[in-house]
Image (cartoon, rainbow, N blue to C red; front, top):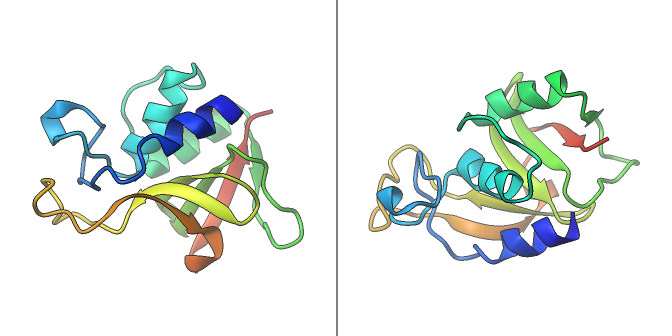
Amino acid sequence: MKAMLEYAQRFIGRPYIWGGDGTSKKFGGFDCSGFVLECLWAFGYYDGPDITADGLRKWCDLHKWFKVENVGNQGLCPGALVFFGSGKATHVAIALDEKLMIEAGGGGSKCTSADASTGFVRIRPIANRNDFLCAYERT
């Protein structure tokens, strides 16, 4: 996981672009699931199609990743996938440790180009979001 986290940090500063997967078709920008999938694909942790945050959460369930529903006293392992939303996952990031995550965030559906982007790949405290849903760690 250390190599994947180092890889993820190489993208810090890339623009948040709705539907972005890091390729030139979206000016090298990412949305949240595109960013996480790029990191998983690069290290062989995921070999499926491009999917949404909620699709990735369901994939983790099917592939029996360890689910963490409350991070209060438990903490997270580096590399855990952290999901946010209310019932349905609407955002996903990667835990760097029990307090910080790396994410493509701060944008939204109106960020369809680098020029229109208001967000980027960044490191942020997990606690800055109040809609923690669950996290998954590789077993």
